[in-house]
Every structure is written in structure tokens, then in C-alpha cells.
Image (cartoon, rainbow, N blue to C red; front, side):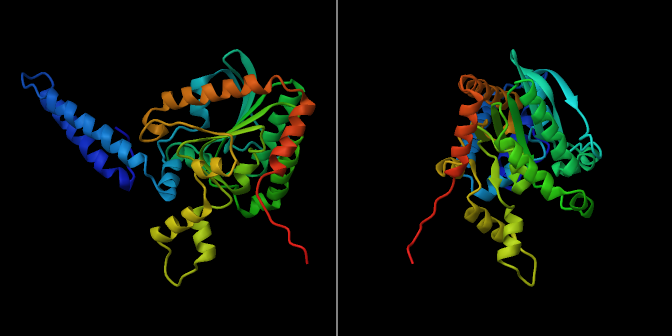
Length: 326
């Protein structure tokens, strides 16, 4: 059973608690209630399928932020081998909000960079809740340059509410660090694959998202601003903003994987188990691995010049506009 339950998951949780109680009652006793347990388990599966096939954008945002959801290091440890983590940006310090290093995906040597939110209060504070500072982006850039130098594909995992907006981060060049990453990733002469595994917020996410192939997990989100931030800007009130405001903003932002696939911002949606990635991290990791391997097989046939040309065209065609003569 999961440790944390969202409001719309409460009916599922109640049934799961009943199932656990029935199992405890029947354990080691002659009472046979296996039939009743099977009926409840089927009811849970049906209810979960019903709920998770009709989620609103705001509900998907909550799932993307779920504290039990797998993070970058979870996926690295599950689908990669021989991971060697790099630390520091060679300028100021090491930023734990971003992890980077070298590893193998099956037999293919790769370089990895990704956001890490941390699990539990102590680690979340250590990781700054996945909000990188300039040194984090410069550490990621250092890994990217190593990928280019050693001709290794670059894989990035995106999962952040946004770059850290603190005074110290601004003093050390937060905006410049993000801008440099955008520029350097756009001209990196090696295949780049990015996956939004949770929450992709603002430039803090985009700094790892300039890629040849961009995928999103089924219940992840990717947007220029959070629903809360959007609501605060658009609908300032004397009182506090509420769930209805956040839900309205999430609808307007079109931040779900399904919306972004329709707008041709991303290349594909990686399926999650019913109930979200945290329900079955191993299955989710397997799905991610399959997408990564397929993308690497496709991209390895392209020359560096072809990669750069297609990457340029990919980002130039994003969005639509109308020109009118005066």
C-alpha cells in the first residue's frame, strides 16, 4: 500500500484497507474468504482504471508531484549499470538538486543529468526540493560537454518545480546559467534524449530539455509556470486562492503529456501503471528503458551535422502564429 494518498485516491485506499484487514483475519485460520478478497481486488482494479483514465490536468499535476513517485536516482539504479556520479561545477560548489554522471544503458555508454527532489524531509532539504541553483546547471553542462567529448549519448531526466529563485542563486547568475545550457544543448554534437518523469517547471526544466527526442511519462506535466503561480498572477484576490483557481489554471496551461503530444512539443508518451509510476516503479522503469533504447537506435545512425540540423528545425517549428499585412 502507498504511504501517501491523494484526495481522489481515497475510495481506492478504503478498499485496500479492507483487503488488508480481510487478509489478516484469514491468515493462519480456517476461515476461507479468498473469494471475497478477489472480488474486492477486482473492484480496486476497476475503480483505479476508472479514476485514472479520466483525470483532470490539476489531478495529473498532483500525481506528477506525488512524494512516492520514483526520482532520477531511482531510475538510474534500476535501468542503468556502472553509474559514476560527478560532483561540482568547477566554479562554486556541488548542487545536490541535480545529479549527473556516466553509466551504461544495457551495453551503451551514456551520460546522464537529472533533477533529484529527495525523499523524506531531511533529503528534500538537502536536495533543495529539486530546485537547482546555478552551480547545478553548470554541473549538468559539464556532464554534457563530457558526453560530446567522448561521443556518448546524453540522457536527461526532468523533474523540478523550477529553478531556485533565492537571492544567492540570482547573485551567482541563475538566468545566465540556464541561458548557457539552452545555447550549449542546442549545438551539442551528440544525441540527446530527455524524459519528463514528474514535474517539469519553467526554465528550470527547459535547461535540461533541449533534446533530439523529448518524452513524458503519462502522468507528468511540463509548463512555463505552475498552476499556483499562474493563478496568483492572473486572478489576484483579497483572500487566498483555492483549488478551483489552481484547477482552472491547470486547464488553461495545457500542461499534460496528452496536450503536449497534440501540440507536437513532445515525441511520445511513456505509459505508467494504473495509479501512477509509484504504484509499480519497476514496470515504469522498464517502459522508460524501452523508449530510451529505441530512441538511441534511431539517433545513432545520424551524423552530428544531421542531428544539429534536425534539432534546429525541431525547435523552430514549435508554436504557431499569423502574420497580417498593415
